Length: 147
Length: 450
Image 1 (tube, rainbow over the protein chains, first blue to last red):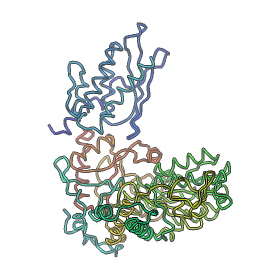
Image 2: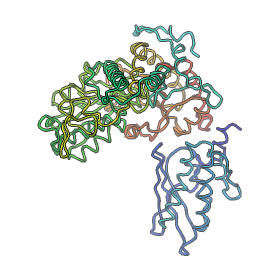
Image 3: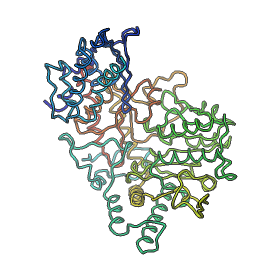
Image 4: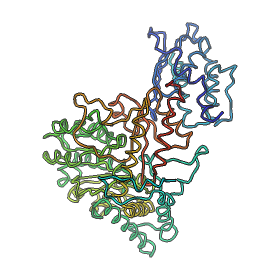
């Protein structure tokens, strides 16, 4: 597989064309929202999440935005992945994702942990695109800090 | 690299001497690089140009034979360095048709535009009075820019307006990317004090009608500021003949080093303008409480200047002059025409500022032929610019993706980002053909066409 094909896996192109959890849930006071922007390319993502009354469990992650296939696919994959996770699990997940993407191809994302998002492993070899993949994950981190 | 047809392409309108890009390429070591296993096709010169050996050698020679602090010290090297530094000023000033004392060294166009905006702000609070009173802004005075500016020719004016109570207004762009001169005539009025605009759009490649805008500004006594970044490396430039009051350009976009650029000003205006940066090298008399300043250009050159880069920039403009700006302009226009011919037939490609594809409704299109430099920006339907750029990079083709520091312009065309291919004197027909051929494959790769 060429480097370009490791970046644009079929799964990534699928998610970007058919984004999951796209369209923000109605704001009802129980949600926290984060808007993130990549000033380099103008990519934007608004992500909304709800934390259950137990103060721990993440529910109903929705998002909308515009941008490159990497940023859009990453948001779609993340929203699928974190449904029902605890805050702590999500924090660990985000940290591991960030570390792998910044590893310049040294660390692979584990498919058992990251699901479809493991397909974003190839992004780490393209340092200019790491921010694209991180955008939604930073938004979730920020939203949870507000929830 | 180049095909034999390149220098012999017939063109009735083109009497400029031919340019042998293949020969010039030997002067640019980086153009021999390989990217992702492919020969580099560098089409990002509007962002930064590559530098010929002659420029690198000029800096190297200065640093290894004559380096010393300029305009101070009495030793031999100091005198030699000062002479070379001032010779460089004369060379670069001559390149834009100016006298040496009309050229202020800056670190680049952004610094030049900020210098002007802050100096006008200083005049507004009375610094440099009474000579500077002509620049002072009153609340409600107007600063006019355009809807197609690079952020560097927009944000300094936003800040100046915010500091002074002046109002910022914008000349709109028509659907074909040309400036709406009818709107400009309405906008530029008795309250207009500054009209700042770009000579050539860094996104559209269109050469703007400088004379018409200067005439509108002159009617109301407004100061004109020209961003010449995208014209200086690509076409003959005579700033006094254009009639602008001030102009800026960046060395690194015109085969020169990073960290150096020029601010041109009409002499009587530079003489009346108070300084922005203050400190060493720009004073006559200093007491603990106050100081008096040198005449231009030194008044605007506080602190240690980029001497080596200035000498490198002089070598760059000598290189451009040796090749010939008419020949460069004609060569790049041929490349732009070939690029256009190739791109316009590819399904899903929308060229920005293309009269042949823009809708002509309402204030849609200008009149007459539009002069251009060698660049085109475009949107790929269904594929984000970043993805398109990544695909091209995989084929060794370097283009710019994003908003190119002109976000409002992209909004004007209903998009957030575009792909920009920009040529320079060292690009060949083969570069353009490789680029067009690669663009043809973008939408298929991303699965947005059958």
